[in-house]
Image: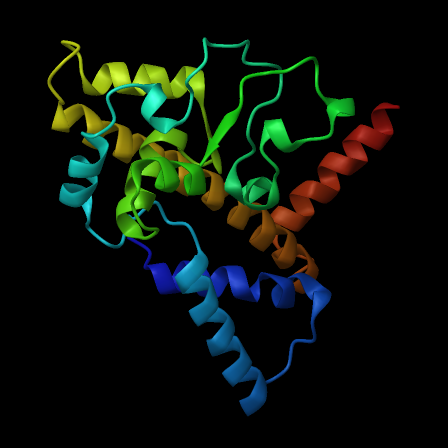
Length: 220
């Protein structure tokens, strides 16, 4: 499995290999800056706790959630609305929650989204790998969890309505991490694929795109 540091390094280097920065031997100052950037990414990049192995602590935290009321949804359910939270790799990291979007882009008042910060506030837990592990189980690869899906998850975690099923929770964690990793893998593949077309214009991917464009233009 690809390591956390490798993923972070690839994300850091994408602007350079995509042609937005000069390709030259890194200077000492650049290397130092790169290391500082990597350290910053490592501390802030959301991985869903996959590298930290805090599943046992996350199980204890998740078992405290009896219903969506524990996460702040105290009113009767509203309509879900047409907007979906974006994947973190595709703008989700900087996206505003639906309840914070301008009224002009909303249809009436859809159900609010749950952020990780709100989850930590409601459960009175600190940020870190335990919170990351729980949140990825609820939100998958997005930065917000939707009430409808959270309710479904909670039902899966307590199939008899009372006892917490650890296996069901861990299944949700695995699914959430897979969704998170798949989105980032697609993002990296497209980014690195575009970069390869710039650096190696005769590579098979570049030639394939060229033939595809010729076919589209010729069909007009």
